[in-house]
Length: 113
Image (cartoon, rainbow, N blue to C red; front, side, top):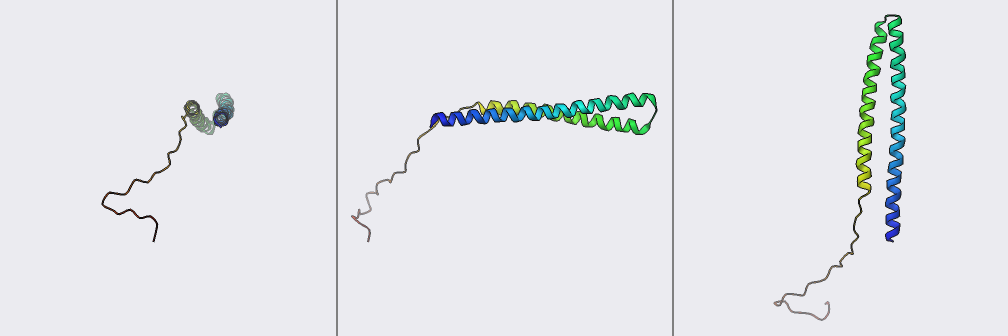
């Protein structure tokens, strides 16, 4: 039973790590895509002046900052969750409730009426 519980805890930790890696790779892909888009727009910006492109670059830069911040927060959360997953909990045995003896001033009966 103990080996099953430890195996289950190990599998949960591995699943959490895999999910974190997948999320991190998606975030990295979005960050790279936004960086490429910003670079293309800046290249176009210096060729032909356009106010719309400047606003678009600023908007994409804000999205990039938000994604980078989210990726950092996800990485920190993943580190904390992996630390929590490694914690082991000691088992215990449940005590069964016991009846206390009747007080001395009450009469003891042999059966229920």
